[in-house]
Image 1 (cartoon, rainbow, N blue to C red):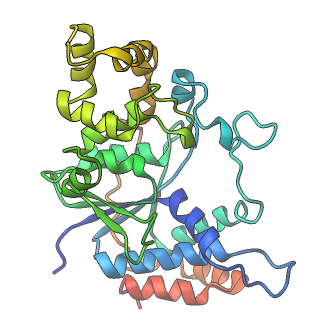
Image 2 (tube, rainbow, N blue to C red; image 1 turned 180 degrees about the vertical axis):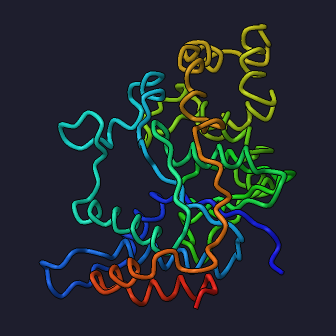
Length: 309
């Protein structure tokens, strides 16, 4: 009998990867694009086959740029806004119509998909990790380093990081990986380091003059961002010169940075265990999708991986 294991998918990370990584081999330019759909389904088949989760949840961005993060740091993800838009994310024209097809495919197969209004998929993942960690091992699948913060060896939480090796050969991110790669001890410390460092790709300024290596050294030396700030306020003589001036100048940012960097642990996420389906949820819908979009092969690969055939 397979041991219980929960797998959480950062869905947008995966379907963007599928879109850019799977060739669009349409011979009829008027036919709808489905390369991201095919790739996403193949990713699921590979992940289920290779890691044998007993529960699988596709975590969804109901809001890719939540207002509470924008209120904290207005520059959050502004560079990703579609031209002239206030809230709409810029998505490739050929990807946007594929996302609803992915939703329909997951529903037909019976694979759980969960989002929360006003929250990102990262927050859904953070909430589910907080809810289930310590009860069973959890694998978080993503190409986003932000989710390294959920790593917790004692609670059995690791990240399958797809940015380099893809879904077939992901980096297995645990605390040993974090120690070797960044010189920090835990997922909690990763979040603090990321806050200090900032992230231009998300519009987070960080503290001027504090790069990744310096941020890691400071968090390691003082244990946490709170410990570092207490040392600054207490006049620790080890923090001096330009570094002290930069950290003091960044105080207002450090007040709000954690609100943006840290994933929510209390998003309004339904209590769904996400157990793998024991049968196809909607065979007629699956057949319609397969014939309409030429998805028979990737659908069958998912079914085979789920042992539904």
